[in-house]
Image (cartoon, rainbow, N blue to C red):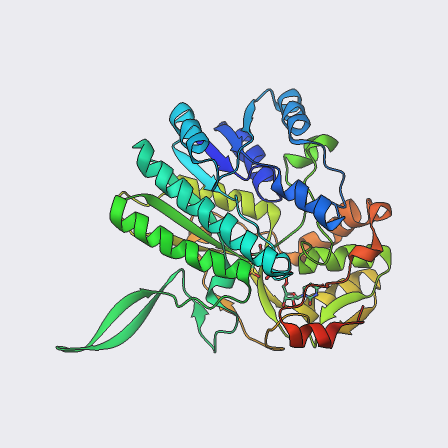
Length: 396
Ligand code: USQ
C-alpha cells in the first residue's frame, strides 16, 4: 500500500512510518518540523538524542534497504503543496498526525490557544478538502484522542464513537445512534472534538473513507524498528508541557525527583504502549470503512489506571518518592473510566501491559539517558485558568 504520513517526524508519526515501511508499504512523510521548533521555544528537548529527519531517513535506508521520502510543508497552510504531493504519490491511505498534541501547551496563553486551534483545524480541513479535490479514493486514518469523550463515565463503558439513545418520536420511544457527546478538557482536546465534526461532514457529503482512532495516553519510547539503530531512536518528552504522565514518572524515578502527582491523583486515564500504537494504525489501515460508510471510530487503548496508582506502581518498582502537588488543570480530583476496545482486539491486537513493560522502559530509556535531563523543565507550569494559576504559583 502507498501510505502518506502527515506529521511523520513526531513521537507517534516516526515509529509508525518505520513500522509501515518495515512491513513493505511504500511510505512518504509530510512534516514541517514544528515539534522540533517548539522544543526550541520551550528550551526543552527529548531525553533521548534525536537526529534530524534527513539523518533518520538515511539511517533507515542503511539498516532496512527501504526508502522513505519526506516533504517539508505545513499541512493547513500550504494547500497547493499538499495537493501536489497527493497527486504525485497517489496514496491509498493517509495517516494524519499533523496536529499540536499537548494539552498543557495549548493552555499556556492566548497565543498558544490560537495556534493550536488554527494549526489543528486547518490541517484536518485541508487534508480532507485535498482528498476530495484529488479525486483519489483515499482512506484517512486520524489520530484522535480518548479526551474527546471527557473523563468520568458513571458506570458505563465508553462505546467506540457512537452512543445509542432513546428519543421520543411521533411513533413513541425509538432508539437512535448519535455521535458520543463531546466534552473536551483543554483547547487541544477541543480541536479533536471539532475534527470529529469535519470527519462526519466529509464522510456524508463526499463519501471520504475515514477512521478516527481515539487514543489514550501513550507510554514507552521504542518500537522494534526504532531499536535497530541509535539514529532511529524515538523522542521521549518529560517536560511539564509535552511529557505525558507515565513517561514523566519513569524519568522522575530515574533522576530521583519525587513523582509529580496532581492533587490526590484520582484522575483515571486510558493507556497504550507505543508499540501497540503502531500496530493499531497498521490494523486500522487493513480494515478501512467502505465508501459511503459512516466514520469508523476505534478506541485505541489497552488499560485504564488512576494517576496515583501509576505513581504507586513506579514507586514500588524503583523506590521513588511520591509528591502530591496542587493541580494546575481544571479537572475533577477523582473519576471513573471504563472503555470499550473490542474492535482492535478483534483485529488481532495483543496488548503490551504496564506490568510487563514498565521495568524495561525504566532501564532502557529513563536510566540510560537520565544524565541528559534538565530538572528545571520538570514542573508543570501551564495552568488552566487564573484560579488554578494562583493555587499552583510557587508550587514545584
Ligand atoms: N498528571 C499528573 N502529573 C504529571 C502530569 C500529568 O498528575 O506530572 C495528570 C494530569 O493532571 C492528567 C493526567 O495526569 O489528569 C494525564 O495527563 P497527561 O499530560 O499524561 O495527558 P493528557 O494531557 O490527557 O494528554 C495526553 C497526550 C495527548 C493525548 C491524550 C490522551 O498529550 O496528545 O490525546 O494524552 S487522553 O488523556 O486519553 O485524552
